[in-house]
Amino acid sequence: MQLTEGFAGARTIQDVLDRLDAEIERGVREGSRHVYFTCLYRAVTERVRQDVERGRFEDGPRLARLDVVFANRYLAALHAYQRGESLTRSWRKAFEAASSGRLTILQHMLLGVNAHINLDLGIAAAEIAPGSSLPGLKKDFDEITVLLGEMLDEVQDRLAGVSPWLGLLDMVGGRTDEEICTFCIGGARELAWRWAERSCALSGERLHAEIDDLDRKVAFLSLPIRRPTPLIATALAVIRMRETPDVERVVKALT
Image 1: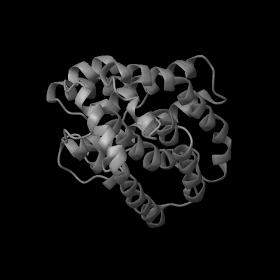
Image 2: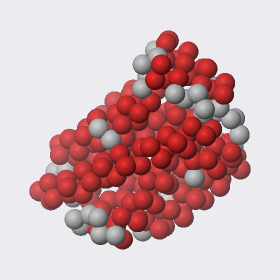
Image 3: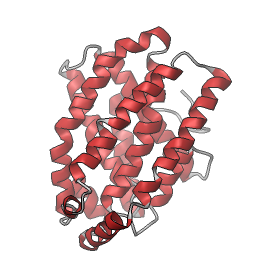
Image 4: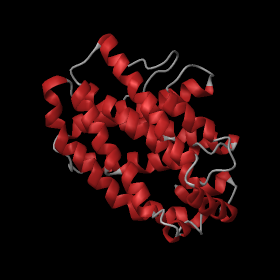
């Protein structure tokens, strides 16, 4: 599917992984912090590929198609941003933040998660299972939520290697575990499913209007990630002081 001019989407999960690897290499060369989310996404995509092959899902081929359609929305947004083309507000907020040296590694990752799950996931689900076929996707959709939960400790262990004071958020009520769960597993994915239920029968201008409205809301949700409350902001500033500024080193730890 042509998502933006000049972008040819990936066709298989392996194709997605290859493109994510290429973007990680580019991010390291350019020293761009947006690549922190790419590393996280690459790890999740690889796990999905393995579990599709193992027969974990009720309909593995359909789940693989969802994974590819979902990934293409991120890859297309990145393609558009790199070329100065039009893209969604949600992804623009995430990519523009990559030039900021004031955000922690976790904040960069969460900005990508916000755009990709809160905006892209429901759109991809409705495309793969339109109309009355959507309920049949729910079991595998929920199984991905379980999979993300299984990966949470591993992700936090990797983060701790390059952000040793991340646990300070626990002390001020930020609760790192709960923050990631809220965005990756619980609320965000549930909201994405509800949006898919509302929009799966829409098409044309009505669908575009719904997506535009969702994009405005998701872009707004990026604000507390970029500019949290004073107490959390102070804790993040201290955490950032102990984080490595070396993008390549962070990438090696995350991958």
